Image 1 (cartoon, helix red, strand yellow):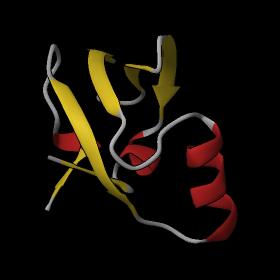
Image 2 (cartoon, helix red, strand yellow):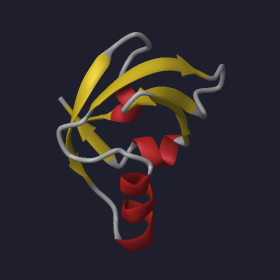
Image 3 (cartoon, helix red, strand yellow):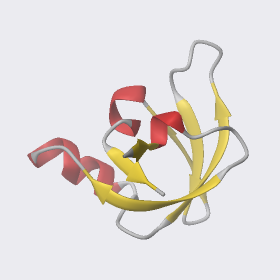
Length: 73
């Protein structure tokens, strides 16, 4: 299982599954990260947190903890 946290800058990945429970999972889905959506990894901060991505045409910054809950292929 590969997560969004492990993706490299410049990659475009596809979401396979969302992990997590309740409000956390709902918040990730509200940001537009749902099953089979494509995510482009734009930047990663020097210390690895946050990760800047492009989802559905807009930029989004995700914490490492949230990025770990997104399974990709």
